[in-house]
Image 1: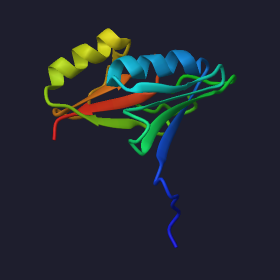
Image 2: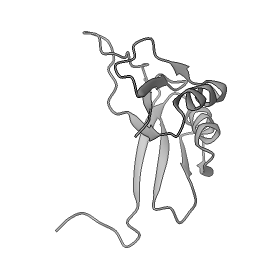
Image 3: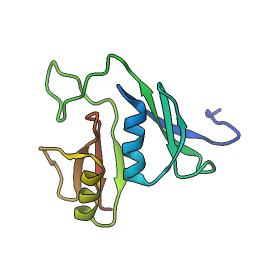
Image 4: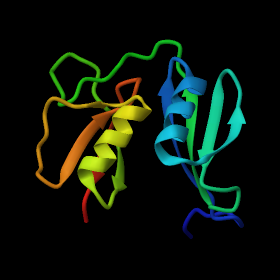
Amino acid sequence: MALRTKAHWFGVALNSPDPRALARFYQRLLGWELHADEPTWATLAPSKEAGYNLGFHLEELYQRPVWPAEEGKPQMQVHLDLEVDDLDQAVEHAIDAGAELAAYQPQERVRVMLDPDGHPFCLYLD
């Protein structure tokens, strides 16, 4: 039997030294609604009915990951992939929201971005 709930809810949580600030960055980036906004936990989703969300959890010992990975340094544990219609426009929007363009770009149709806490996320063309 597969794991499931009546609501079929799915979420991804990112650790952060400031979950509220990171949630607000992703709110600017994605235009999603803020549903929880506590000092140790925040969540965003397109709507309450969406069935998926992004969560942000307080990690007091958080260390910014290094990307690409370097031996002996904190490495990313997960990254988000976001399909976009216009790569240049999406990069500009992400930077305006508070992201930075990663120095290393491995693919032509993908742009690796870093959120304010250093979590990598990819903007890509299908």
